[in-house]
Length: 293
Image (cartoon, rainbow, N blue to C red; front, side, top):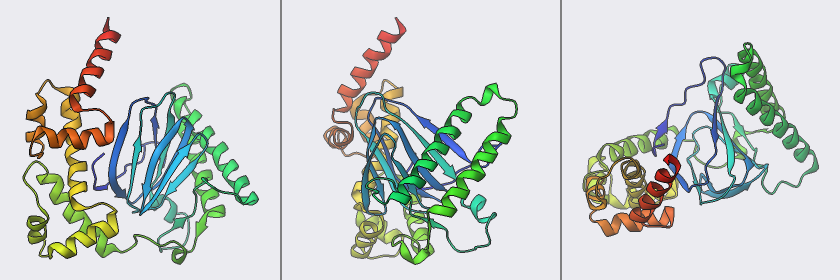
């Protein structure tokens, strides 16, 4: 997933999009945002870090983390056994079309550290529904009427969120200004298209008619990363695919993805995956060969 505005398409047969995650390997999803409400629910294991608009969370089995529409967020997980989680994406239009409110709809729905007895009961009800939704989704090929079942669960999910977790817009600080979203989209799209070139704070600021000092402050304030950290996140996400799917040399991959040298690529890679690109590729190639025998 690239660090940019993401257009989320719901499933053709019901209003939500469900993604199942089950991997023991480290993973890193760079910061991005989209119009949909996103729910992260851990079935087993843990998600080491979820960044949401300047806050960092670590979620474990049973934890629910809701990410509001257009909130900048990212995920990172270390190597770990038995990790399984689901992501449920709810198009904001699906919620708006069912209530008479044209304002942005915000929720306070993060179960981590929750102690209020009534809210704990609401979270338990939400947890039961997410489990039911996931089981129905997994078994959809065995049920010719599954789209009716999933659609009814989708409405039930939105009902619970609106009844128990909706908050006033003023209650949630953060990233709600369209002007900033539009500017960030332009800047991140530009970097996404030019990540393999030599990029600098000065050159990007010049493209958008901003001072380097303003661009630097703007990025850190609204994204929580320096511009250079962001550029490296895009380069890493792009180069990882090539590393795992080709036999290109490490130095070739580094240079073709905007890194000045192999050492720079290895440093950025190791910070996320805890080993060098060469070590990571060698290990996974060995595992792949063992499985094929």
